[in-house]
Image (cartoon, rainbow, N blue to C red; front, top):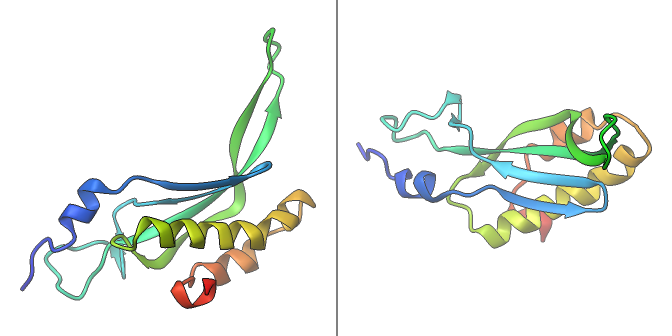
Length: 128
């Protein structure tokens, strides 16, 4: 059994973000695996990434200088089939692909649940 073959990737992973206008997509690692939490003792398990989609929202809380905040979009967080050892350049392309597929719906205040579920199956072939 191979123990911790992904440990270096887990230890070194930094979120990958792509932002365009008022929409941002972030790939992150939250300890998820193929079937629930990642189990490094299971040689068939792999640490999987999650994407979260955010919208910039203007917040005027009465302060002298109101600010913009990133707010997670409803139904905008999905575990994927993307392994943590995927190269950063590929993750950036995937994040851009996701952003391109949701930004118009977000701007129009339409639900992204269906497209989000579809995009959770993203792989290298979808972006090429």
